[in-house]
Image 1 (spheres, rainbow, N blue to C red):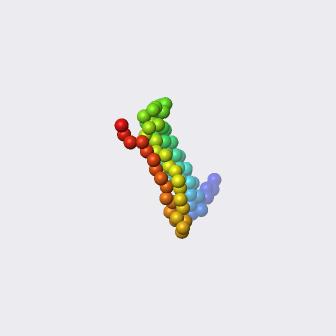
Image 2: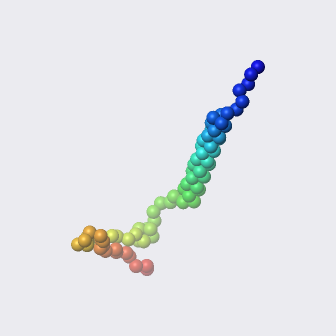
Image 3: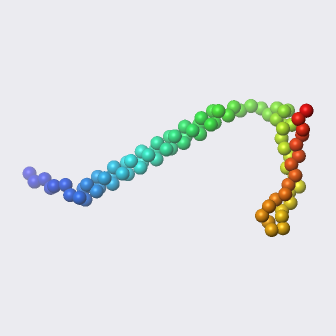
Length: 83
């Protein structure tokens, strides 16, 4: 029984497949970390109904004006003062 010796092509194919698997597992790991961090952020924010205090704290933006060169916007912000 004759067995052909391993050639460089076989070794490079083997290293390429290992590199590919490494990249796949690395991408999978980063994806898991991203999903976990996003879900933790969503859990940290509690959903609640808007209250009267929230409405009072809202700011109203109005009267936008564009500068002549078009690089800036001037606007008015109106807020209720604290009682």
